[in-house]
Length: 196
Image (cartoon, rainbow, N blue to C red):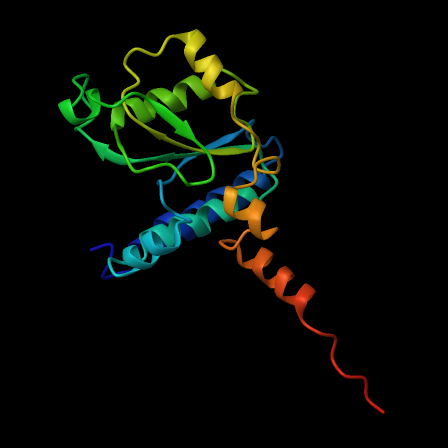
């Protein structure tokens, strides 16, 4: 249904953009919006392969960018492959993985339960300044996470404006951001010839 009728664009792109636009226009805007997206949204081969299945990752990235550019405080959580039905019992496949957080969409793939994604979002809400204006990936088992451990992992995150991916460090621009690529192209192109 989602693939056939543009559901990914409607929900993950335009739906997120509409929420951000409405929230930004409120007299009292929200203190922060937490968006659950997906690991892999900026990985070139992954995004290209996913486009064969309805372009979900590209649409999620467009939704992320709408939130980032809205001017609202935000946190974007990019979980790995979701496991389990959301109940209190963790699937064995998740229990075997230690909780890992990363930034820059460069983490190796992993799994996480729906319950642990929700738990991470609640822990962010409990900490007004934790992970504000940050995007991070999360996989593994969070069942042994204490309040102090959550404080530690959130404190290690950089804001999106502070973080540069290893690729961006080498190239000097972010090859996954169209505006960054366009800016770089304009910088390296010779000026147009002057007319006589």
